[in-house]
Image 1 (cartoon, rainbow, N blue to C red):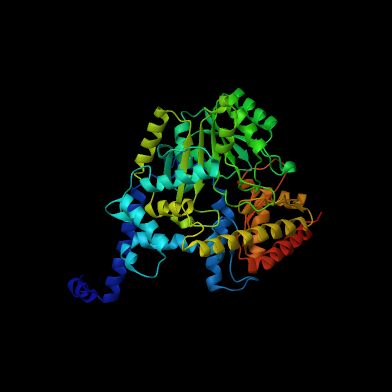
Image 2: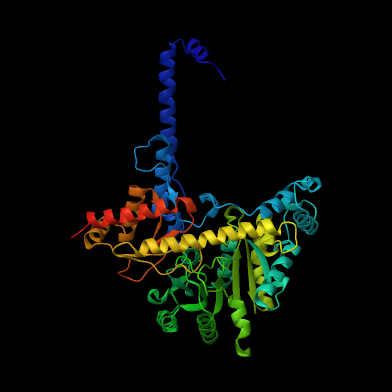
Length: 513
């Protein structure tokens, strides 16, 4: 590259004059380029389906939280020194520790030379060897079969059979990048036209309506009954189905989430039987989101899989098509970054299985670390194994702590004026209902915001706590909620609850009539 002095002597002009010339030239050139080329990805060039899709878990409030987090690095002039992210179920980001056994097997698979080390217990080594042999050449760095590593699919089949007492098959199991990718596979299989619809609960995990928007299909929303701890009412299913049918929507599936997200309920077996009967009568595929099956806190409550309930029912129900989803991200593992998950289907015919395998093949395979994590989750240490004591201590400590935090948060919310919260029976969230003063509602709408968005933004700015407004999950008209996780460290929990309470009192006083 020539120096400024070179060009100064070439043009016989002072260096300052040459510098100004180059600046003008660059400005004119960039203006010419930008004015002569019209970008494709703007306005109508961006997909309408993408514009329509919404995902509030990482929407306006979390976006502002990230901005505040960056500001706090340079300016501490706020009543808090960091943001507490209660908007997403991301346990390890909030000091909830990983399970040692999972990390040991992952490390051994990623760096097999460690198999010769004395640092690792024998059972972790055997587990890793089995996976590496099944994965073949390249180990965790190579593609697997599109359905997943064969021995890991076998681990999942064994897990399902132990859990439910009924047979499964490796041909019905697909390893996926988190449960989300498995859900997307089934949605793609279900949606055939712009008139296609899938029934989704309200409040719902917004992944479902976002996927349907991307696929150009319609969410058929049915409301959970908040007064009966977010149960599913048959009359409401019938209402939602009939009204959508009359609107010309062809409904092919129904989603249920148990334990619930964002609502934290654990559906009873009798409720699940009603849903399966409804699906049978209406010829619907059942999508069972069961990623929180390890997260049940209320005494007397027990997770029961939809597959077990289906298999326990009389013979006429045994052809109802079912897709069930599980994940490495939840439970007591919290391995969100691994993106591990699986999909099990039941009662799918050969044609449907072939098309599902084709869809999985388009993505080649799920990432290997996520697959290995699912192997550790479904084939964890048992009594008598070298790693069992440590594994059981870590599992018990985390689940006991989650249960205490669930109790603390529902108690704190119910002690706040104009706030009520159903029992957090499971999952990782509370979904309290809040009364927002009419003046605050009016101000929110004048700003083009939902009232619970105004509330959540106020909580964030005032206290540094990031939650998700209930409107992002859907809620009955005239009601307002927010979703918060139960994941902040237990030693910080009283402080976080105080932040909620102080802000709520301040907010009500500010907007009193």
